Figure 1 (cartoon, rainbow, N blue to C red):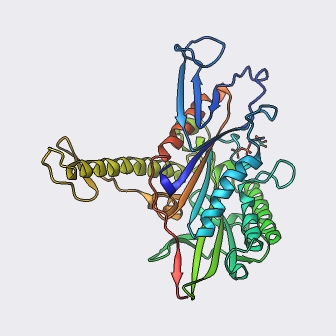
Figure 2 (figure 1 turned 60 degrees about the vertical axis):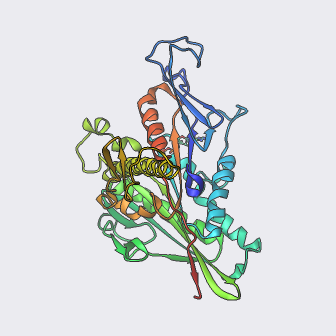
Figure 3 (figure 1 turned 120 degrees about the horizontal axis):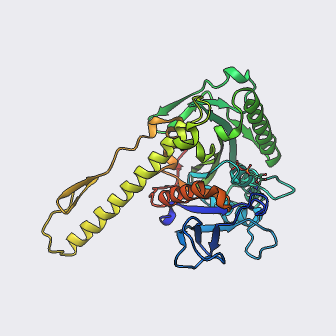
Length: 398
Ligand code: ADP
């Protein structure tokens, strides 16, 4: 990830029992590098490092090996929570917008990472709001004037539903995304709930999750088909040079649909329901790769202008913003199709915008998931190239 903008994380969930599926573990974590081995390229059966085996390595900001608790490098929920939760909370306290995505194939551990369970296996990321309340006790400036609101929505088949409003399951996917000229995209009519203690957050979280499960039985068959976004709006009143001011932060915690929903070859043989191919997920992929390409154009522009101003002998004037001249070919920043899907429109600010964004890519270690794991690692690696421009949301003299 670039500087302040966010980070990329990769987590390997426990494997299948190797004997059961005749499976072998093909993923390895080495510090901040995740390696995946292609068993189809024949090699020595004794592991990594054989030149005849095709091992591809990907670097991330954090890599977690959560396969076997006995393993010394095992990363528990607490470890993940400690790293990422702390990053989210400290960003929110400073007034940055934060977005945390879980991306990966169904069954790879997205929900486990996001939700976990508060007691038995440790808290998932959705429980991190606890830190905001603890912070309050922890004498952050003017703690009593912190306000926290939450909302919880689900996107299914390009429609939005409020998970915190009771309504007829089948008719409830009716909310629309609109764009406010200053505040950006928002869901019209989405309920926001003021909370004054952590217990209330958990009650709302549980209510929303129960609602999501009910919809999964009435409307679609599994949560692997829908995206859920839990949003925490955190506002702190502060005094700056004796003048009242406000710092506002929005934390979006996103449990995405299974990444296989973006793959036409996966969906081709299954029943042709509109939601088989997930438009939001496909568009998310396009947005991420376009942003990554644009970031490359941007950095090549920058290095070009700096070499020109360094007295480079090319004699070519520096390019206007958004374009760069590359050996006579003009490279232009591509249009980002945020509005092509509900998810990308709603999270526009978290993708190349005013947000610190963390993507957790979850994978299974088994060879039976080779293609999905490879595609998840590539996807996450691509996302790493995106440059966000997070800024503190400060509103002076409120
Ligand atoms: P997804 O949300 O990606 O479909 P889940 O989070 O439901 O996947 O995980 C699938 C199964 O694997 C669940 O039974 C879950 O409890 C288990 N699991 C996933 N990740 C871990 C982990 N890191 N440690 C222990 N169990 C895990």
